[in-house]
Length: 189
Image (tube, rainbow, N blue to C red; front, side):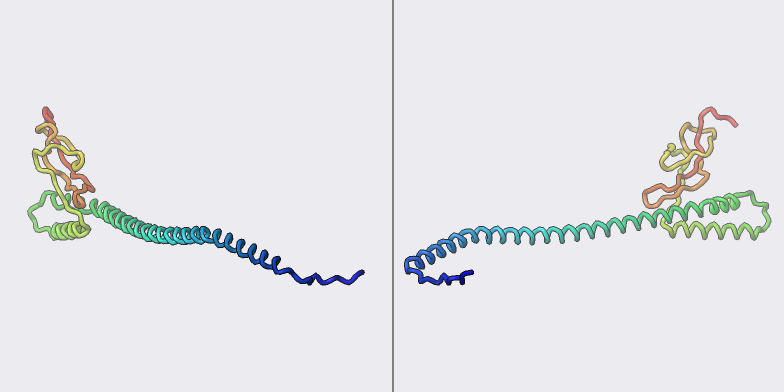
């Protein structure tokens, strides 16, 4: 094998000038190409920043919406529990009120006093839960949204003769209609 010759022959000055000129042209060409790339990069960085800000706003908005839904759910659960408690207490209260209205023998009745006290206590508990009792007055037209017909009696057709059982509202919402006796023309007992 022959030893490798060093290719270190002296370059001519015109070759060097051409090479420098070619390198300068290549650098100018690269610089011209880098400008639009840098502009595109700035646009992309700006767009990424805007997306991050929008994402942060969206997450904050979503967090607020989740909190509102939690509050609404909690409020609905509280209302459901209150109505459930009312429904559990009303049969006892109604029974006590029926006992209270039973004919008195005229003799002192300590049990009757206890029934009155218990009825008052239950009414206060129900009121404390946010419910208000209501009754329909005689002569009022029947309203199925707030009344339940429990019986009929001689009287003006479709009008309340008397209320048998109180109804209950939570604010403006009827949670238990009042029980009424409706008039029916031509009904004879």
